[in-house]
Image (cartoon, rainbow, N blue to C red; front, side, top):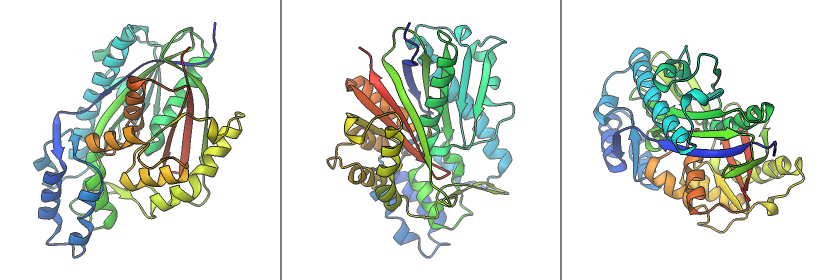
Amino acid sequence: MDQSAKLVSLATSVPPHVLNQSDVASAASHGFAGRYDDFDRMARVFKSSGIRQRHAVRPIDWYLKPLGWPERTSAYLEGACQLFVDAATSALEAAELSAAEVDTVVTISSTGVATPSLEARVAGRMGFRPDVERVPVFGLGCAGGVSGFSIASRLACSRPGSVVLLVAVEVCTLAFRLDELTKANIVATALFGDGAAACVLRAYDGGAAAVEMSGQHTWPDTLDIMGWRIDPQGFGVIFDRAIPPFAQQHIAPAIAGILARAGLALEDVDRFACHPGGAKVIAALERALSLEQGSLDHERAVLADYGNMSSPTVLFVLDRVLREGMPSRTLLTAMGPGFTSSCVSLKRAA
């Protein structure tokens, strides 16, 4: 039996409330313009972001109310649990498996606090066995989808034949903060959306793609590039440096180093499937990786339809790559708090 981890299935889900970008821009103007002198200049990001719409766990008016940790956490637990169930159920159905056949659940989420963690909260609804192993992972941010995929694949390899369910679920819109009159908060309001993705991985003969290798690179002294600040009202977003220029300058050598450890080079990759953090980030990645401008088409399409959903977003991109017809070698890649680049190489099933 082939001992490499295989991607058996992938599914995505989004919450029911659709936020049109023009409506969010109007709401942001109503909430910020009279109190933030630089808002008119910053408001251009709502048009330049490349986003048409996003999905949210609450209607837009809810975010305009005074909100603290209790309200945000309640919305997170309700919304994230439903997204988890929807994505996981669809992925298991696609794999022709039941929840009772799942041996390990890896849950990726950095946009809310849940103890017990999400997979425990939905275990009864899903039908997980009492002996299912739970691996909740917090703090990876936008890199979580790729890093979680790597973790899940290694767990699958550790017990060949066992079923590993990966679920990345984020409720990023809960970081919208009317009390935060900052550039970073305006950018977050223009970018963030909610969603989830689930994958079934298994070390067996079959699957849509095989996990070839994975790796990470963390740059020293970069903790201030991206992350959360813990405030009385909720999470406060940290975007303290320009991420697109950083990516353009540093990402190619980092990815090349990760690939080199597996005896591969950038030229060996047929398709990069990147986390679409924003329109400028996508353009910077194309330049950094010497790709033709516009070649990261699935990334732009996902960004336009869903915004930046943090960890699951790159799996939405992978879903489109799979549906179009996967090339021989696809490299999943994302950047996240740390500041870290995470990669997973996938080989098309023979």
